[in-house]
Image 1 (cartoon, rainbow, N blue to C red):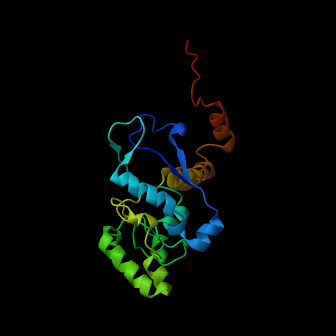
Image 2: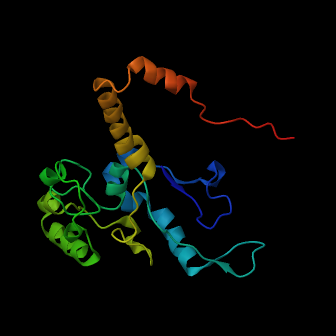
Image 3: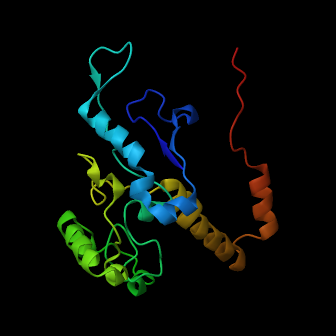
Amino acid sequence: MYYFTILNSPNISSLSSIHLATVAYASDVKKYGHAKVLKPLIDDLKDLEDGVVIDDVEGKVYGTVVHLPGDNLAANETQGFVGSFSANYFCRFCKMHHDTTKRCCREDESLLRNVNDHLSDLQTVAGNPQSASDHGVKTPCAFDELKYFNPIESFTPDAMHDVFEGVAKKEISLLISYIVTAKFITLTELNNIINSFTYGYVFNIR
């Protein structure tokens, strides 16, 4: 499923601002590829980039895709990167080897992907599809047909998947395990604090 929000909407943070754009069976995406499945949407976006006329709106309305956040697997596959995170170069942000990512704790700017290297990788993989794991890419991004989108410059990590459901959850669990094991606090005391903590207030506005 592909959803969209309009970034200059006055209610961008509300759930009602999230709209459904495209629905497809995973089996169809696997069989035909993202480019074919997303073609109707991309054709509409091309028209929007050139400007479209909408009833009751003076002049033309313009728009484009700013970025494509999503869970890592969906984002990688949609943007043409490898879907297997056991590949040698699985990251859509950098070209750090899989083995190095297991022990590296700092960003290496020299390994960050850039537009020129990405185009070179695509050409290499097109000539030798078996080398996809060595470059981290498989196909051009379906959204490349748009004027202002580029999978390298327009990538966006997703805070919900990467932080709240990812590293933050893991780090907090390790921290709790440590402070209980080190006997800074007992598990019973910790649970009592959690159960009695006021997480918010309900205001009755009249």
